Length: 295
Image 1 (cartoon, rainbow, N blue to C red):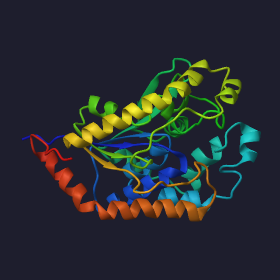
Image 2 (image 1 turned 30 degrees about the horizontal axis):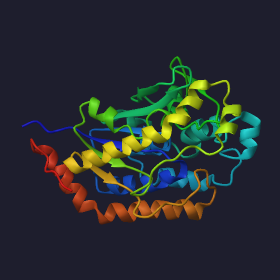
Image 3 (image 1 turned 135 degrees about the horizontal axis):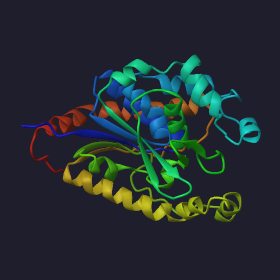
Image 4 (image 1 turned 180 degrees about the vertical axis):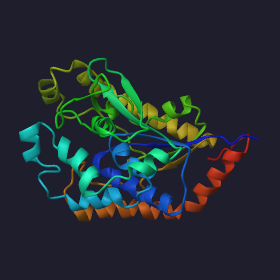
């Protein structure tokens, strides 16, 4: 009997992603690795460390450079157009300051995808990441480049911004790739519903060069809330195991406070440890022809 492929779906959310890091670190410490993963924005920026098997790395470098204006700052935004400095945060840090394990990442059989948004077409772009090179880091940067506080990233023949503009919770994408069962890590609590963006008048002014971005921002609440419903439906059927913060994370997307980063990270760890046996049972069911539904 063939084993059903199990995937990982990682939502973004800036520093809410520290919650995701806590969960992924617990999985790594317990040698739990899935067949494939897809990440959006912070989901892939932090989640790539799951494929390279570097527990603790994402928290470590964010704490280390929390107050370094070369990493993320208004200084960088004014000087370069990017709040998270393109060269320092996405190239110098992983290549020199807190080295990303290229070899382990490339040797891992786990499929890994980054989700980006094409600012010209208004469509999602799903890039498989197999080899670690300059383009690899640019794809990750593109996926995490939020409108207004980042410039579009040119890579792979596309001009790209944050993948959350097109596909915030890419569960359907993973299912289309043959992942019948998925572990989904959300960074919003149960009952959360996205509402219209505040300050759309300002967004329209600042993003007037990119009408597809403005259109995506308008549609995002409806699309996001439909995706939440899809996650819930797959969870009910027993096809998805979903981590959601038990309580709102209440952290700024761009916090520079290491205590806040650690708090959110520890919440992820604690909730993962509490549900570890439950997760193992879900994964074991992947060997069955018909997963057992649960409410």
